[in-house]
Image 1 (cartoon, rainbow, N blue to C red):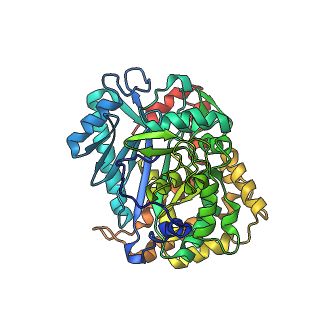
Image 2 (image 1 turned 60 degrees about the horizontal axis):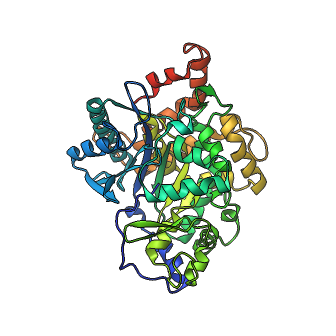
Image 3 (image 1 turned 90 degrees about the vertical axis):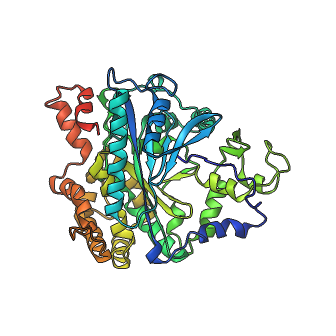
Length: 457
């Protein structure tokens, strides 16, 4: 989730609806300026007893952030406490229960992305060896109950933790017990954004299946391959989902702005603190009728903050966020941006992907999304067949798109090789969670905690 690093009192006050749309338009870039921003989260645990460390405890999350400054990271504070870091490789931030996230810098190619990931993991592992901490690459804690987890000292999280139980039964699990990999990608125009949004949304269930990596809850199989994905189905229906309107004729910035305006607020950030506005209307805020700030109108910073509190499967800011994947190991952190860059950053690949999914109806797309957390690649496609039937074709399209980009490393390799972990999943027919379940029922002798041996970075 986003970390606020500055309160910009000089941000312009929103005076017109057009300013909301212009915010999205300013993200438009020519293709030679398109970048790749990869985000990945991991669970932090104490190697001595595998508890999730609190912020303040010796050798805990505060000390972890402090030690990372030895690698050139600069501290970001909230309320006098370091809650994030900034540096050339982007930002390091904390999820609500201390999950550690790298929000990577905008990079030109996937070779740079994978090198950035490797640097980050090398740094946290070095600090972990010093502090007695390990880092787990999964989509959900395999063994921790909610009440075993700490809460980080970030103002927005306190607001969200109070609000989540009012609107869904699994929102606290989303905040406290999950990790994801995401990729942020650019667009050239409103029309380009719309096509990429549609392809990304339609194929998000395939990404969820290929990266499904959360089959355990409190040491037992939970009946899902991606319980993290299932959690979003009962987190907050006003701010999650598949957004059917994206596939309607005329979809663009204005329609997404209308959606975002109807998403209830969480907070307003003023003078270094978060003001609780949970459940209130941004439309009222635009009219100066927000009860917690009577007479005050929002700034463009407030609009940017508000957009970060919607959680659909694909999210629009000044870039598009692909949000469907569980957390996982190093090679899958590189594979997720490879999938989406291959599909969305070459026009031939983008058109081929759209041709594959354009005939799916709203009901079929939703049914696919609903089935994937349990069934993975066996989830039924709209019109017949299963995800398994198109997975190889989609990877072929992505591979062709990556080769067409022609971004080679020093050895002359294209970016297409980063898809190999996904090709292996399609070849074997088993998504990561199914491999974990086979081990649970076999060599692990139904001891889910054996997962720490294989899923630690």
